[in-house]
Image (cartoon, rainbow, N blue to C red):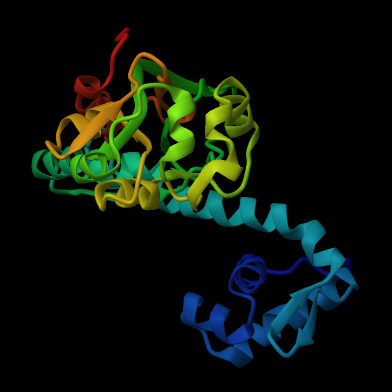
Length: 298
């Protein structure tokens, strides 16, 4: 390496990787396109390898760029965490806290919790990352995560608040038209809503409940929110959290004894944030707000 590039160069590299073009990175960083191009040229000269190849669709990363990608993403997430921490003042609930949660939890459960939290702490800003992927708290991609699996990383403060039961549900109108299944085998005669791409967790469920195999689904979509919307629209029978369905009179649970899953629910944050007043306030608010939804409380 001929010389050490500035931090701005690495940030630009990560933005080009993420956006796929110089113009997209320029918009994201509020820079000019020539400035972005100069940063990439400077980094390529410093490390002595080409990082991108121009294609009709934009910039395609080289193997060298892909090898550097996780380090660039770590720099970006660490920088974002540094800024969130710097916004806060010692002992005060102010500044930004980034929360990672699944789509369903973030859309169906968190808005009311976060609204109460904001009223209580008006100097607090929330960033909400909605994804069924597990954001890495150790890499500070989020400050606090709501997870449906037990956190295995040791450098985390984690609290199990119980489990959210999940079952098969359908709209009342659908069951009036098609009838109520009396057994899992009867599901063969119904329109089922389920996944498209198979994951290890989904594979384990399918092995235990063969009637919920991918080939049986009339609607295949990997978004839990889209599946829930289809259930509400009367498309067919799908998997839904019991507390959500229980709050809507038109959603009916079917085969409760034959099919039930329990989603363990955890709140976790990096142990370095234990003394942060703003993170502690959000952590406690999430625990308090989600507790009424769970069973098997601790």
